[in-house]
Image (tube, rainbow, N blue to C red):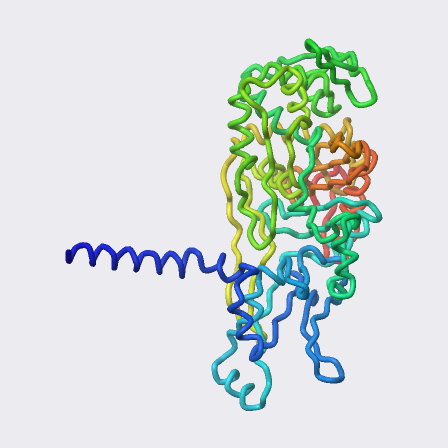
Length: 477
């Protein structure tokens, strides 16, 4: 009997350690946890700031002394920062515990209490760059969709825009409008929660699968006549264009659907499924402090020829978020290492003392450096001579992949426009993922948006960050 009680005691101790250590962050950031409400009478909610120190959310007082939450940048950071009335979302929700906690000195807390003042809460600094966020917001313009920009080597999220958007400062007044059935889901963060067919951006993974299953992939050739048929399934290239003889690199650069359907028919489905699952499809992703949707890949070992062909070109039942596509591209840029994206840079007291800081983390190695090098070469060729050649310039180099993703939800049919890629090819700098709802081909909408953002960033680099050096061959800065 004694051993039973000892065992129960040890189990209880283990559970308490697990609950207070390993589950602490999840519990503290849960929007249904009302523990923080008890502290709000004593602590003034902390600020949310950008990486460059711009205030994105703060607590102020009106003439009557009533507390109010203000958002100086309005809609521009709305989905990441979130809102604080009618519930909470974004960082306002996920960092509610941190914003209503205070690590200033005990003596300063006593002094504030003696004066009848609230203790200032801790401030949350995001990884978002104000200028880059503004550039992405402006470039997306009147389109619905999303833009994600990450620092290639770290996974640090430098910009995240989703449209349609909202003004977090007027949520209460506009709640019924924002949540109406015909509002277009403006509260949804399309960058992390939106799921879309990836279209030809998915050919990054189809290419990798073919390379692994065919050691002689360099010898691959295909004669494209503008379409491919297998039994009762026919798939065409975009606008029925006949590309003629293509090797694997030119098939990728010209985004030849017929060639990639042919490749899809040759792939072993089980190996293809395992590869995509390893890249995060049908699984949880290492995305903290942001609500996200799990990407879907539903190819089966006995799928039909039509399903195999559609899946190989990013159609079929495959769905992915713009954030997940950025993570996939980050693996190419980082020699096969997929970075864990993060949006919280650090948390500090109102007096500027450090509380905690995020460090970059490699989520997993999903491909070899050699494989990443080949994909980089193919993505670079897409910019040099393929569907993204609008991005070729003499200031910064870029590698990427376009996508034109057709959809039919039973009520509407259309084509989403994609571009994913990275800059400064020899020493990767920025990873970018652009999704434009109903934008048509990747070249017609997503690529021009990416170009506007990247031009704004690199051509104004001196103004933003100090002196830099540009090279006329298009590599680096």
